[in-house]
Image (cartoon, rainbow, N blue to C red; front, side, top):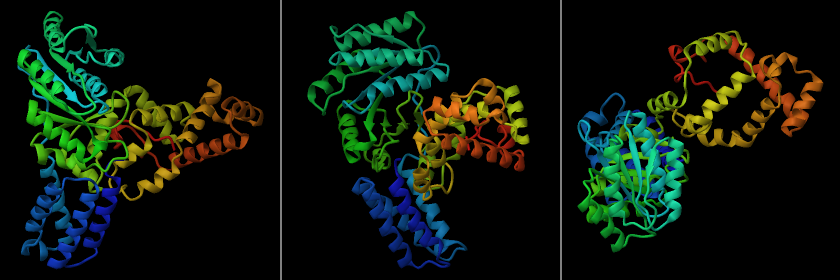
Length: 451
């Protein structure tokens, strides 16, 4: 996951600060040298790091902090606040046109940044907010891009406007606006062509679209995994066509995350969204304070709750019934399957745990314990059971277990081990009433974990 290495390094620095009852000026400077090195290794822009360390040091070396009751905690608080400032302080929304006016958004970026997929993700987000978006295929140089947009639009249940690859992008954009007016669309999202690198033809084409179509928001999609290159691309796009904001894709990958900490400081343009996975639902609003909290290993419970609410449909009656069964330790394999489905919808167990406070350093150990293939085997075991067996685990005798093992393609020992673990979970639930209930009992919108 993004920032994992940076988070671990910062956690070690903070641990040393907390262990000291009183801080000297030298203690602060030594800690900030380590923070500086960690940020540079995370591919944060050198000038940005220099300004950041200077700002933290100016605030941290003072009598109020040094002589405070908890100086180590105060320094950490300052680092957190300055990191939030670095990333923009406030969450930035896409500016929509008032009333029934159509808002036109132009998406741009280099090839391979995930622009077309991000365009469809954004359409899905806006649809959830009550908008009626229209996706427009303006990439006439790559036929696969048109088809990709159409497929993703269908998955998002969003209309796609295309005129094939024999028309100019400007003409397509103009025709799309007229189509949107006639069909009551209030958002038009232009998926423009990318290039392997920035060139004049691409920039001229984007400028022509902006000159002849009233574009209200120009969003640049950059690949977070390219580090400082992403910041350089953002600066060049902004210099030549003027962008309104940035979407960072592939933030779930093995990236050092420097782009997220550098883009706003270098370009002055905010990050609006971050792509956190390959699924069309994996686009998150960018909250500077929440991202800073994740980076510093403090978790992001608010985003976890929102993710649960977005991805888990809750039937209140069914929820009460399940909560009652959980309380009595009488949940069955159908409940287990439902939990696995909910967990998958939220990006998997590792994604969920990464948002919990204090999980930063432990996450590596937990990831090594979580075997996704084993979870798939578990699901295969349950799906190999009859409906009666799923409802009543006590029916599972030796011959039934043997049949289930053959159906799931696993050894009998695997089935026995899973059933035993399931029975232990039932006992544990019975001993901890209320802890796994729905949202009224402190859960994350009814989310339950399959263990």
